[in-house]
Image 1 (cartoon, one colour):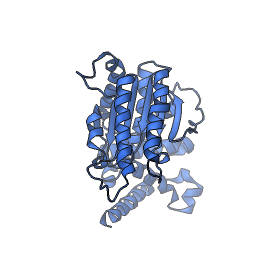
Image 2: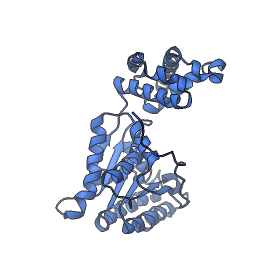
Image 3: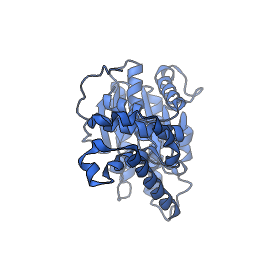
Image 4: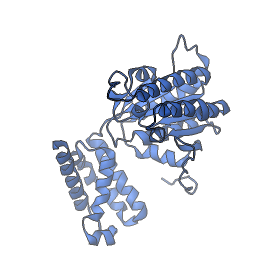
Length: 308
């Protein structure tokens, strides 16, 4: 199939605003690529898209006292399963589906809001949500990604006031209060949160989520698909690898990746090119034998990590 896409633009630039990683307009072709690259059950992407679209088509019309939609989607699961990529891609796909060329995107960088001084984290969170986020929502449709949301909305019941600063509790309070305010004042905003540790998220945040979607480790079929997709990506730089990516033998590679996340699988496939100096100098000589060996080594390393 021939692509109808325009020549690739430069990657999105990072934001200079404190606590923000990205501040840009949607849709974005790089985010579209991320959406396509994450290989999960089709039903997962369909459910995420449906919930996100519903946020903009229904939520502005309903009474929140009767239908309590907060405009929050939470994706949780192990590291490396593509949650952040899905969040970014979802944002772009929603803007495209709804044909909204005025939709804006903000991505919060939680570690940029942390502070060792008592009260500063709470103030930073409140200022960001009530300031930049609210201002953007006033200007038009907005999607906000909160990556590693457990760092912003830590479970207060699991925290000890003696072992943890009061600031952490107050920061969670500030996030919840601002989410309630944003939900009431701005029905054109969607918040997509991600977490590797859902058990560390405050229950009050979970109850505010309209959809909680678990993004688990890929099954054997998905693993094979990730291997193939990675080889196709390499083939864009090394065209002679195209036939390798199309091999039916890859369908048997799924069992080699049991327990591995998508990111680890992609890195393992790429590492096959570093199994020897000869391959590093002439990557077009890569064979499925090296790919299989690289996956075997990565799986063995994973087993060692689990045993520690």
